[in-house]
Length: 298
Image (cartoon, rainbow, N blue to C red):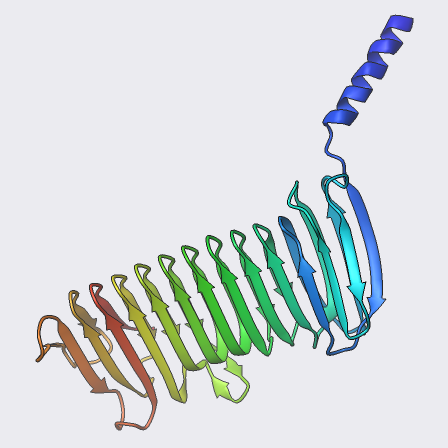
């Protein structure tokens, strides 16, 4: 009987040592409706939610509290929260005022932001980034992770090295670039005085680029790729001036009867036409060095 108790105690102690230690933290501080929040979490997950309260609240779970230290500092104007080591993974759920400015930095953590209308500056070297809502300004950067921005923005700048980029909704000023990832822009809806994308520049080196959806009247979209394929899919009713050029690829036009011509200044093809009166609508420019360009109806 005593031997059984000893073995039971030993087994419980062993399981306790093997089970990952966890600590939970719940804290809340006052913050101005347009205040700033800085968040640092090396690995794990960061989720930021906008709410209608003049305060910032943090719910954190630390996988290895002995090797990770949660810290917070600041006042009602600026608040900094974070975890200071990379051992294990931590999950941070942070509620901020909807109009707040939010800055998040991580090495590998996933970053998710929803319902924040202020300025967002998000960076994760290897983690994915996802934004849902109507922020005034978004900067999202990652090397290997993917980026998704869904909703409407006044200004968006998204950059990756190998991660894919998905942009859904409307934007007044859109910029996206990648080395080898795939870029998809699905422009739709109304945002801050215009329809779809009003001004956009999309660039890749080897990744494919796909732009589909609406352009604001007078909007300007520029798409460039060194060797990726470029697809442009817009409604048949779109009024725009099209300027397409490729050096080593081919142009396929299924939007109108206009057909590409050999470049006058060397190899490649070019196509220029207007779907309405010249200068009366948007401007779409596509350039590729080695890749093809496809123009389709959406």
